Length: 295
Image (cartoon, rainbow, N blue to C red; front, top):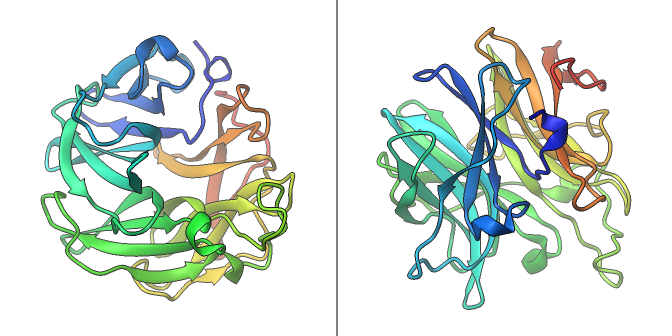
């Protein structure tokens, strides 16, 4: 199947050196017959994708009963780690790490909840630097009104959080962010979600998503001098792709960089992944607003 045939939000593509294949991860929301959990689609060329393959199904003892959002998969020390967002009726939203020996799973629960358990958190992404591992994540607007982006350090085995959170920035630090939104008509609120580290040589950027107004969801860019410290300068506007977001960057086997994000954000049930060329120009992120031909 083609990307246009796959209903997906919050897409993440792993480039796997071992199998020389790409793996597109999703929750099972479009496949109710699979039940709660995560699945993957496999491709050799980013054009033709397999049918979905289930990679995680929680057992009856797993604390997370809701959400199953935003899976990201990393190959680290020759194993595969899936970080995702979960919640339950009795527990706040948080991020936890699963582990497998293959990108096809089966993934098993591995870590503690690695975001602060007294906070509502989501959309964790991993950042590796100087033999340390950091988790950059979003602290939700539902608790703060103005959502934030924060970072913690993880143990080298990825099992637990070993530092207190550091506030990197508030959503309203970006001038483009809207705070008059339909889902909170009597409050000034700001969403932060979909964080992802993009580095190319000396260039550094953190992609993240929010709403410009009631209609336009998009991806902004925050430029740090250090990803783990509050040294970020915000872009003046979102990237030139509207009603789309929760972005990540894929570096292909041909060493080309693509922005991967979901489009049709407000058209629930019609969301799908698109790939757009992305690059740095004079230290700023640039993106081709037209989808790449391989879509």
